[in-house]
Length: 101
Image (cartoon, rainbow, N blue to C red; front, side):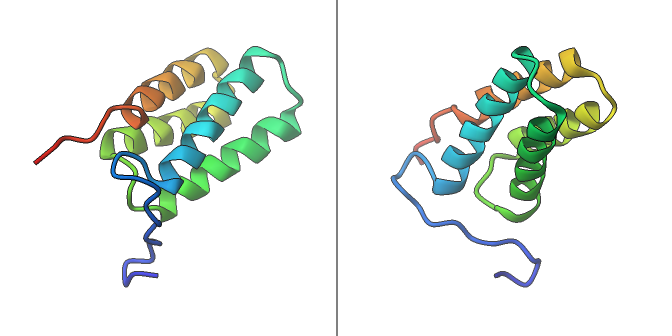
């Protein structure tokens, strides 16, 4: 763990990290759960995993973090449609290929 409390993630390849792939899976699962009228307990479980990832993994793009924090706030406020919109924005940030330097 780093001094700032964030956990460095292990790299799977040059273009993706374990944390990003896991987070992307959770984002897609939450969108599907919201669209499929899943039980509240399932929504809470997925939202909590996303919230934990946003707080502790450092390899997540800043734009995705902002969108995910917005989605979490919207979810907790009961705004399902706006939550899906924020999740899809985060998904697009998570799937952008890294810039070559």
